Image (tube, rainbow, N blue to C red; front, side, top):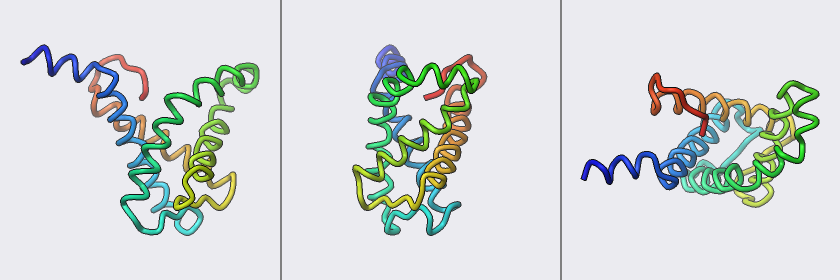
Length: 134
C-alpha cells in the first residue's frame, strides 16, 4: 500500500491535480486582488473550471510557446516569461467566457499572482526538497 501512495505522489496525475489546485487558487486570489478587472461571476464553479483549463494550457501549450519564444526569453533574461504567463491567462479568458479579463496588463498581473501562489504551494508541498515548480 505504501508503494501505491508513493507512485501516486510522484505520478503525473498527482502533479496535474496540484497544478489544477494552484491555478484555481491563483485565479481566485487574482480575482480578489484585481477586483472588477478580473471577474468570474462570483461562482466557484467558474474558478475551478478556468483553473482546469489553465492547468491544461500550462501543461500542453505553454511549453511550445516557451520553446518558440526562446530567443526573446534569452534576450530578456527570462523576463519575457511574465508576458507568456499573461498570454496564457488571456487564452483561458478567450476560451472560457465566464472568466473576464479587462486588459493585457491585468492578465500580466494575474500571471504574476498565480506564479507567486505556485511558488508558495510548491514550497509547502515539496518542503525543503529540491524541486521544480509545477
